[in-house]
Length: 282
Image (cartoon, rainbow, N blue to C red; front, side, top):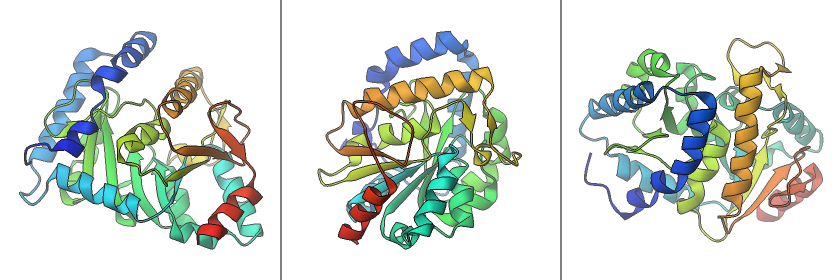
């Protein structure tokens, strides 16, 4: 990896996010040794990649890809992911998603693949996807934490063979990993985007429900939506708090689409309003 540049350095929010992480760390009783082990293991995998791989160059490429479009759609795995796209189909609007930046949280990639919606990037800790999903995206942002070391081992060869990949951690970053802040795959996308956005960008959140029901695309083994277990509910509550926190620190407009989530900081818009916005920019 070449020496980090200004854009790369602008992505690291370890110091700013550290208080949040300490709170989360204590609440979930995370293992600090495993956190470091996961970070270092992903870092070592990335160091094994061929010499043509340059993380900072890939980050520049990702930023340039964002700059080509006004509308950025972020897809979570909540139950409204399916219902929203189904309802968008009913009003002949899904074709509009072929002209947007489509960023997906983990298993939502499986759904977009099924619906033939192009995926720009997958943000994942690897527990909601299979290696197959690497074939359907331009970029992968893979996250290392204490509970996914086994997944990093399982996906090692795929990571080595996939070029446009960036690694993240939730503790102090190493030379070739970023800490943009964030906790769940969904809210982490907003944190990651913050330094890369242009003033004209607008962000639309689909399937980012943060409630007690998790969508069936959250895990490969799920066949239907189900109630989240207590630990997952607590994680989702933190995710929603972090969406609120980061939205106050972003100048771009952010919208929940067709959602039951209510917060002062992020406007909730109907599917018709969403479609109209996309049509006007198509």
